[in-house]
Length: 289
Image (cartoon, rainbow, N blue to C red; front, side, top):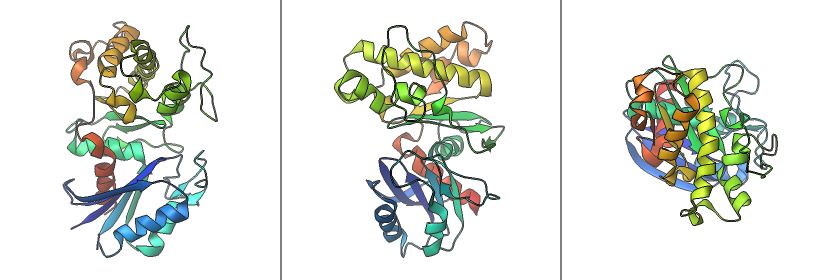
């Protein structure tokens, strides 16, 4: 059995073919442009691949509610041209097979839970820090949805007392994404993060905001594992800074050896590496079957 996978990001699409155990046979990526141009490439990739189902992990916001009239849509995204795009409907015009649909971060959380760093656990969160910030969650063995789906990348954060940057989220200015995403780093400091690797103050500030958010996620969701991926987290010096600041923020309130004694194995990078989202989309396809 072959499964199809789409990791639909605001910057690039990654499409793949894989198996029921999360193995990837083939993958391709291309820039996210207009829906017409991008979907033409998606459809060309899957044509003649004979997959049994396709899973989509998409940038959002999306509508994952199968009882909704806009199920399968990308909804109120700030991404130009993609507002109210019927993603699942367009794909099923060409491939009348089961299609699993969720956020890109929920897909990554699912992949990590089945085959990655959270394997065997009944809860975890997956955070991506890149062009935007998104968080997917599994609670008691299930993907977390609700009214729509979590948008934990847009929670409000306390501003660092020495930070005068106004934030760059078009909806909220200084929410977490507005203060700590890749574009926020670049516009605050005037350089891309990859060119600021040796600037300790850059990463101290970045860790300040991410740790603050992770502290909130721990207090609200109590996940068994916190996984952080995305382009910004290629700066591996962030992990010890984040762990230290989370412990400081919690201040002994959470009495769990998992956090207090083993935080290095509690807040971790993805076990599936850069394939977390794509392998998670395979899991969505398998789940839909």
